[in-house]
Length: 419
Image (cartoon, rainbow, N blue to C red; front, side):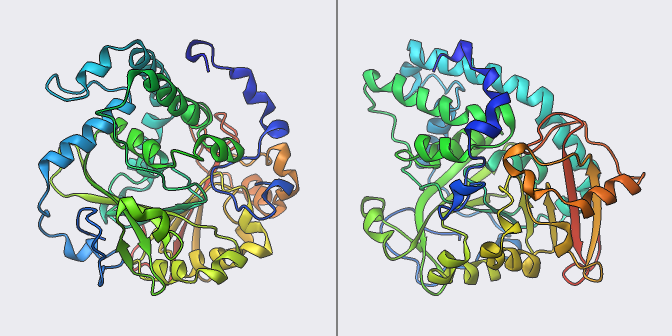
């Protein structure tokens, strides 16, 4: 891909050419849409704490292997196009044309994204999600793919981020001994994988299947962590066992372990200027009813999360379908609050006796690919409620300013006080 001549005209062809979003189910997708642990030593954690435990247990920072943290952070910065310190083993590779072009592309694309969306999202979050963020809740982001960026932009104070998608986990980057002859190809593959979300605010499903088939989500997660000024303290392969507990996985044996465990990665990171580490989990899992019946441990795991805030974006309208009722019901039962665009789940599933709803932006109609998912009930709300605040940024499939919508829902049962 020529970084200087990115095909912006492809934007107009999205409905016709692409299945949309990074983590739609692999069953019938094409018809419409689409623990605090040890280093990865191979020793399994037999009594891992469920996600959400960090809210109560992380009173003191865990010991950090500074050498490993420096290596991981440098790797993340390098693939994110950010200069490392001169004494880093990766510093010499930044003198190559491949890295210079990669860094130039990302700097330019990120600058535009920051101006057009991210800065505005952070400002909106400070105003509309202030109380939620003040409580540092765990953030549950199903159908996420590797999109840590937007979850972190809306919810920068999350104690934990639990993400799930179909994309493979992949390998933790090892860059120190990479031949220069391979460097350009690897960096270009990252640029290609990032193109859609940097330009459109979401990943495209079929693109992700191809782009991440070999490298998985970890390099993309590393880019987002580095570009949001986070230091990576640790990264290790993990898996969910049949009881819904997290087990550490030996990286060298992860392919064998994947057959018995739901594969995942756990990344401990520290935001710039802060002293309390956070945790990011990603699990490669199919969220359709049929698949979750075979892997009930994922539901067991989610049920252990303490009052999560769920985030849904560009979710391919999958939870409009009966064959995604399991994950839909799980979200409704477990979430203390939920932020979504209209691709998450229909407004009709939110019982007014159980949920308080607040709407933002403008509901137009789904893009052509999902035209059958239009919601007359939601349209009526937007037409009749003149107090709905506009959004000055685009988000989701209708990514143009003035076309996007968000709904913020607070559970009357789960929350004792509303933001």
